[in-house]
Amino acid sequence: MKIWTEFRDRIFKSDVYVLGNKIFTEEDFHDYLNEAEQVLSKFTKGYSLYVIVDLEIDRPTKVQQRKTIWASIEDDLERFIDSKGESHSTLINDTLYLRGVFTFEDFSLMDQLDFIFSDVHTYTLLFSRDPLHKVDTDLKRQMSCLKDCCGKKLPSGDELTLTAITYEDEYDLKLTFGHNVQVEVDSLIRQTDSEQIFNILLRSDLYQAGDAISVNMIKGIDSINNFLFLREEERYMYVVDMASEDYECYRLEKEHIFDEWEFVGSLNEFIKKQN
Image 1 (cartoon, rainbow, N blue to C red):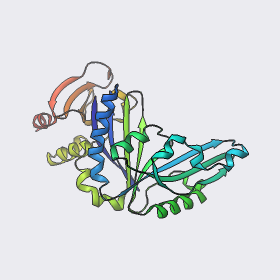
Image 2: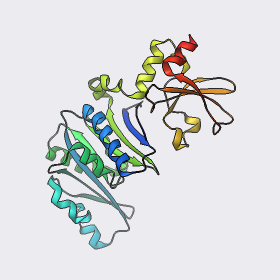
Image 3: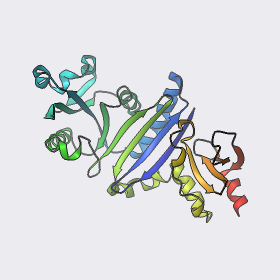
Image 4: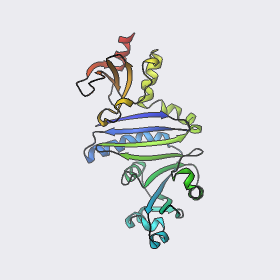
């Protein structure tokens, strides 16, 4: 199992990822959640935690159009809910969109992370300093402009949203926040694996050797999506493994990326060789 963290800066917001792959057992998944909780709890300290529910029903019947979102989710979930907002809905082009917000009665952050993986398309975690009624009012406003915002809850003000993503043997958590929060979490961002590598390269005057971004040319290969560019030559490309303890570096032939990779040492050893 491999677990690593990555920071991605975008135009209007940024993302911090906690990524893990080669997760095949319940024990692996538990270890991943434990690691994710330790990382994310540093970013979300001081925030109230809410669960956002989103449902879409194509060509709903009249009975379905009258049902609330709370009547549409599983009945056994109700007993864990502490408080909840209203059920918000709108019908657009024969698709019914339902949205609501609730809080769990006594769930730790790790429990919450486990829960949103139960249905990654339905549940999102929202970290906000606003009370429940204010979050609920904001959801209602967003439903009124659903066509413009495509139904997605994006962080505004000092809010952070956390979404879960799953693949065959990979589990990802993406924490998204606006740039006005970035100063507040800047020291934590620098602790992510991708930023640590970036800063090592920067301090070593090797910034031009690699911008610490995911390898786009091979991003479709799940087993190596934890590697970052270091240097590119006519025949070879050098990459660093963010999920390894000492940031192991490898040389691979660009035309034969599935062949055996040559280990060229830790990141510090790679830098020494460049100098």
